[in-house]
Length: 417
Picture 1 (tube, rainbow, N blue to C red):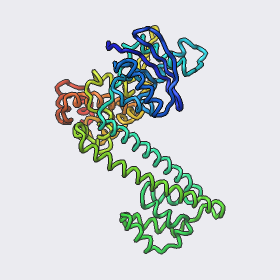
Picture 2: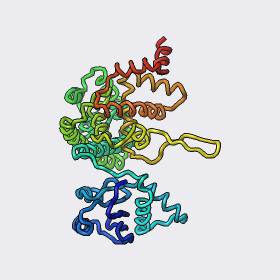
Picture 3: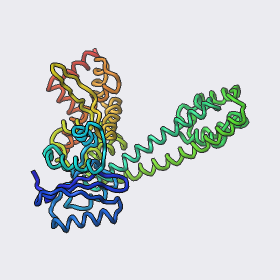
Picture 4: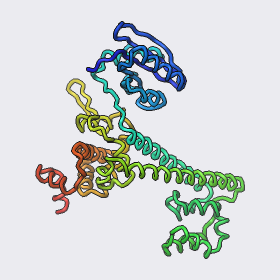
């Protein structure tokens, strides 16, 4: 086990952090408070460097990202040990059943964990700058996608209150066609006043060229009846629709900007081509998987460690003669989401993945449980490809299934027959 000149625990907060330090030489504990300002943090870290002559120091904190971690990353003599907040909460509860929380005592508990259970903690080694940049970009892009969904849902609800026909004519509201249409003709009355030739030209300019679809829209428009004629509802609804459409346009532009940055970064990332070889990965999932694995192949000793970290592997609980399997509650949610969503997409692009998903469904598993089971297999496959720096090959994997007499091939043969 690596030795440190001092062990430091930090219970972080928005404005100031409670610090508990254990000096290995003197055996004494010291408590202090550090403000969350760049100047205060720098002064505190530099004082530690001078006091311990630049020797390695272990720092335990609840988070693995955020302002505090970003500030500490620039100092190479600090070795970070992030602890799951749930771990600290359970440890605190063991000594304080009343569930009371206090920042100085939490820092003390963190120091106990670092001092007495460091063999169970894992030092956090940040990946290279390129991977960390990509990780932040794909996570922020996903939040923008969530924003787009949220705005689209609000727009749907608003249209239902005064102009529901739009939802029948255009199933997908997240298009430039719908946004431009609502901007130009925000109500049914305004749309009915437009000439058919004008509307056809408008549809064609937005690449809606199917004659049958456009003809149906124009026919239904002639006989459409407004849901309400209440001026109060119409005025307020059209104003809200105008605002929501503007928000959609902004989010679209932001997503496009992120896509450009992600694409440029992926083109220079040494690991990207490996993940791009996966069936159905495409530019989005290939980038997310590249960010998830990174370039440090010593981070996980086995695929099982990664399976547990992502939350894809279920947790086993036992009590007496009983045992049961449950969902793994605590894990990086975006990481689990990335593998889960990629597995669901692979069903449409991989022969064996589709068969495996169908086999799980026939066993009685619901959709998401079947996708998690598929993600479990994909993580093991991708981890091996990543470790050996070998691009995925569907034919080679099917051959390996044949050599091992996999039940999956028997299932495929029986269902094809």
